[in-house]
Image 1 (cartoon, rainbow, N blue to C red):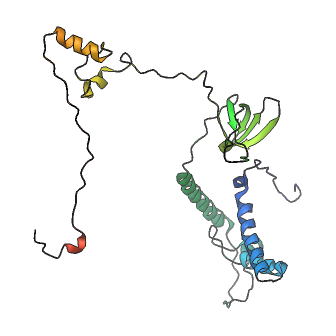
Image 2 (cartoon, helix red, strand yellow; image 1 turned 135 degrees about the vertical axis):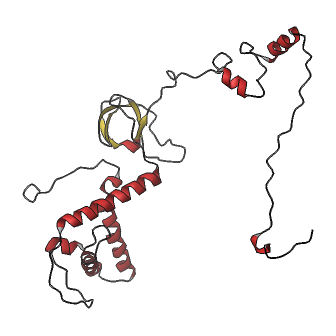
Image 3 (cartoon, rainbow, N blue to C red; image 1 turned 90 degrees about the vertical axis):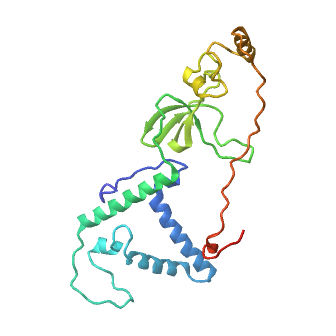
Length: 254
């Protein structure tokens, strides 16, 4: 690989999307193999025909065929074509077109999936996604792991037994210990006066009052008469009923 200038990149285990280009190509090849098997044909011969058609077809991202990028000329196929002087493909323009297409596709996929930045930090207690054996099993392992290292979207976690695993950040989430999580307690002391003023049910309640008895006692001490507030039934908002558009040209008698 070093002699041919190939940079070997290892993808995260159990995350085929990290090697999406190869997975998509394998999908097309396996589709052609299944077609050949259904038609009782030689699948090896059909694969050669499929690869020739793929290499001689202009790509949607680059605008030129893969063979033209590799050999600097178009392949001769069975389609009628006009012989012209072979012009060398400008590599810089093709790279820019390919880069713009990939950025546009990334923005579309991120918006469609609701992608966001990971908030994981090295040293956090995390839960790791596990293979579900049946429906009652949880999608994440209930035993917390420790996030030892994070490079990009690749996370290295350590189990309580000391075994290291490499997973994608989408398969890891923070562990919230129920014993350490503070549960907010709502009372009248931590409610701002603006909320009391804007709420019609508590607009007449003093900030220090904590129950209905306190409110009634405060009003009776001031000498004000109070009456029981009747329960107002809640109703849904009425929908505006209009005639269909096809009756606009007709005069409807009431």
